[in-house]
Image (cartoon, rainbow, N blue to C red; front, side, top):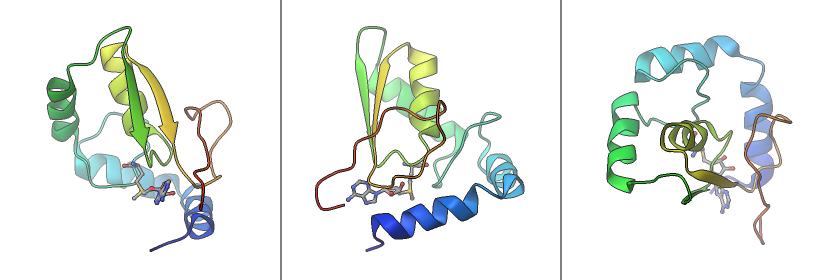
Length: 105
Ligand SMILES: C[S@@+](CC[C@H](N)C(=O)[O-])C[C@H]1O[C@@H](n2cnc3c(N)ncnc32)[C@H](O)[C@@H]1O
C-alpha cells in the first residue's frame, strides 16, 4: 500500500503537468478543470449524482478525496456541502475542500 508521503510526492509531480490533467479529462469525458486522480468518467459522475440523491442541506463525505475534483463537482451540481478527507498533505490552498490527516497516515 502506498504511504501518505508517497502520495505527497505523486501529487507534487502531478501538479507540474497540466498536460497530463488535460489528457485525463479528455479521455474520461470530464468537465473542464476537474482534477481527477482516478478513472471515474463523466458519465459515472452523472450516475453517482443520481444515485446519491444529494441536495442543499445534506453533506457529502469524500473519503480519500485526493485533490477533491469529484467531490467538488458533485457538491456543485447538487448544492450539498462537502467534506474531503485524505491522508496526503498535498493540496492547493483555496482550491481544495477541508482535509484531515487520518490517524496512522
Ligand atoms: C487514486 S487517488 C484518488 C483520489 C480521488 N478520490 C480521485 O478520484 O481523484 C487515492 C487517494 O487516496 C488517498 N488515500 C489512500 N489511502 C488513504 C488512507 N488510508 N487514508 C486517507 N487517504 C488515503 C491518497 O492520498 C490519494 O489521494
